[in-house]
Length: 332
DNA sequence: AAAGACACCAACCGCCCAACC
DNA sequence: TGGTTGGGCGGTTGGTGTCTT
Image 1 (cartoon, rainbow, N blue to C red):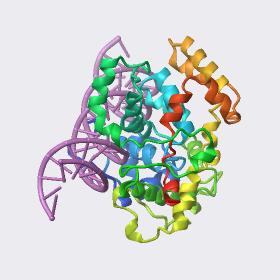
Image 2 (image 1 turned 120 degrees about the vertical axis):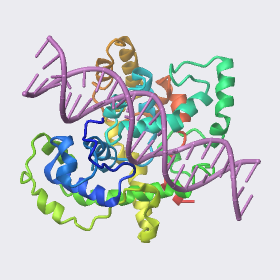
Image 3 (image 1 turned 90 degrees about the vertical axis):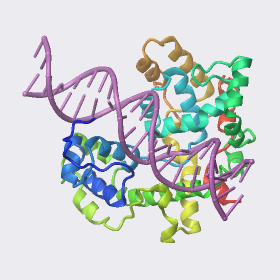
Image 4 (image 1 turned 135 degrees about the vertical axis):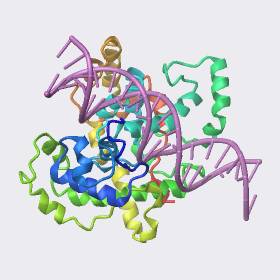
């Protein structure tokens, strides 16, 4: 930071749709070479670092965003127990999620949930009674805001409407969903090609092939940027019920959207074993996690096994006893 | 209806490390 | 070998929306 010239007037704060468009167009066209040169080449009044962050946390086409699935919550919980606050490493195991997103989710939701369960979010060990009392006092209001939901042990139950409070069902949340939809519209138009292509040509920038990126970009000139989540997209009046459910369904169907996740998920036995393996390798977190995920995955093939054998299952169920997805709300 | 409290999250900050010269 | 630069990361902040009183 602070390495740019003081004379330069660099913008800060929220990104405008125009800025997003410039950055997106530039990266999709030329890939990422040197972040420090990106703003200049893309015509942005931002520092390279800011561009990088914006791309990684928001514009990247392979971002999943939306609500976290049960599997993802379990993954985060398990990984955090082993890795601690190494959000980047945790994010690396959750494709489509950013470290920032996971960090925020942890701090705003999972942490409180753990405390409420009497578990120290730092150590993942039970809090003493005093600690529980103190923590609970500190987070009473927050706890009350966390929806009290029935445990969900199978996907069918997830489909059922969950109890929600005002906070879990508000226009802000929906607006975020809509923003996500808008962003997806942008991205989906790009996904006539390999969604991961960017990574490929980041490594080997070639604006021409193997894809004709220019044509793709030019063919996508009418995508809608929506960079400021809370200011979008009602005003456009484009949100139809089908839009809404389509998008939420895509997130809701964890069998689809979390294929990537289930790729990392496993049966309870495997998960248990993985955790044990990981804990034995505590001196080397990277190796630990790699060992966690070195097993072949074919999704959670037996959720009963998972629930029965995974020591974290009861918590996980409680943690993710809801699938806080607007699709369930939309059914109400 | 208004003001304060609270929650969420995008973005920033500052540090660290590796690569380069 | 030491200085500079760029990228990555975790912690923190500030803006905004919602809820409560």
